[in-house]
Image (cartoon, rainbow over all chains, first blue to last red; front, side, top):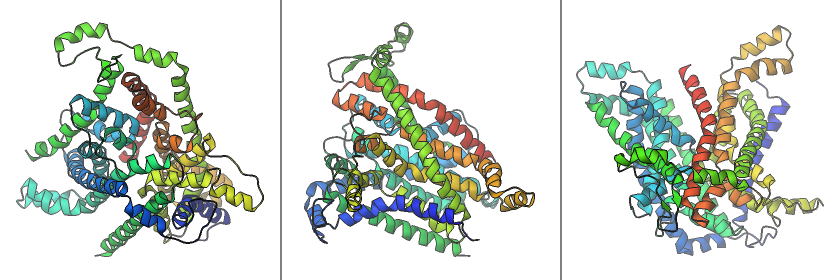
Length: 260
Length: 291
């Protein structure tokens, strides 16, 4: 099928719009000069400046452990929730449960952040990395459960039933049949939760305390004052990591799909 | 029973960390402002059920009255809705042709094109908005390029134009993906049949392609509109002092003015404003799942 000229033009312009800003951002991370309008020559000095800044390294560590732990909690809880919603019999409060799974997906971040902060204050919980983990696990589990349920809906239920007929207990059927089949969705859910947590500024700013500053919070307070080549360098590193991750993930899923 | 064991942990987690916080927001929205820590006095105490009846009559809507009296708040709501609407329309105008071209592209290109649309979604929202500061600021990349071709510099940063650019840029993938999914499902023989029956290409587009992609258009519009209404990052980084959006008002009310009661009331009203589009979206999503 040949593409019409209009289609080629709209794709080219569209992808230019999506990618040019990122390319410009990365290019200027290598600019010797601090100013956007002056090209001072190629330099990696801002990367050096970045790695000497302990506030950034500290924030990177907080961001990483918060994302890792919250994504792991979210994956376990979200998979459980998806299993109950798709496979579970009717139970009292099912509507409330599915409502609570879907609502956080469309909730404005400012409301989620505000409400969780009010909760943490009223129960007297010290705010810091721990409260960010609780907040992130809560909204990530909803995303995980949506991803996992779409996989659970689509696979052949008779496989589970066959295992049960052949004498497997419910737990064995889940561990040996269901879990391997939904594993790619569970992994995708974990990655999604991890990325959402890395990315979050608004909710983390609400629920964090003095000891815990995440990378987005650090970036935000810095860029409110304008462009900083150090932030460009940091952005280039983060974008590079994401691009690498997505490429590796798509190659492995492709290989998995090709396997007979 | 294994299902019970699986049900309770996520259920209890969400009750405590999703539902209870909401109840708190409602409670504080109905409380009185006080110079204290925490800065409010509750109108009622739900730990004491015997007082419920008495306080029900004395519920305090003072904070909501305050929202009505001060024009700042309702102009902020209206302006958020307007900005979200314009951004949604712009995203549709840019996103639809892209989704259409992707669906028309050779089949072996489509996974790559899909990945190119999804990739920005995985990279940080904040960084993608930050990229525009360098481009749009007065001493930025755009004005430098305009200077080369002899066009006088524009001041776009800290205006609503910059906010629209940032919003469309950040939310465009949410518009493209559902539309592409619905276009991809259309059976090409329908279009061939239309052409065989004497329909022109444009006519076939408007009478077959657009109606059949309606579900995708709705989904895309809701996915852009709903989060944009409460958006905080884009207006605070790219907008100016005259960019009024309710998410920014809420944050300032809470952190700068330390007025928890009004911030909670703002949140409650925002929730009610969004309930209609959210319910419509869930209905259409359920209908899609059912088919």
